Length: 196
Image 1 (spheres, helix red, strand yellow):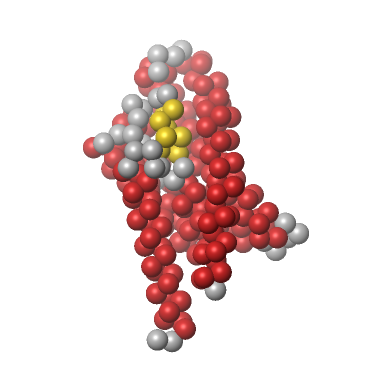
Image 2 (cartoon, one colour; image 1 turned 90 degrees about the vertical axis):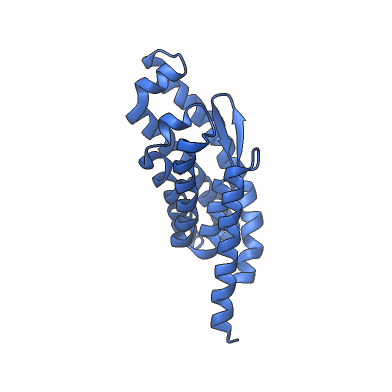
């Protein structure tokens, strides 16, 4: 087998594995979602970010898209939280932010690795950006489209929704971003060496 075919085969195999991991994380409790109150702490972006680092933004977007489509379908048949049927049945919230994780993380890494940050620093910052992309877009779009139903579901006054969402960004969102910045580079670096 020539080296080019071996490279394509390796790429497809690892992308398949990462996609399978996203599927498992989505369906196995505590593997991808850690329940925290009415929402879930999400660690699946790490898998999407790894795909973006190793195989580029487009492939990261594909893995993120798989997660988004599964999130969309699950909102109808097996919601991960009480708010999922309200929020994630909208593909702008369930699919688009997941795709953008791979795009943002991948392009950020490609741009930053040419700077003085080097590969490690670039991966950390790109992972932070990718994870925060998901958090900010999901919660921001939730506020934009579902402010009143969100308030009703949580028994809040409509004026309390923005502070509640900002609190989630500052706690869950920051925790997810830091976790991504720590774990994604550790897993991505050996895969990048194998991919070369």
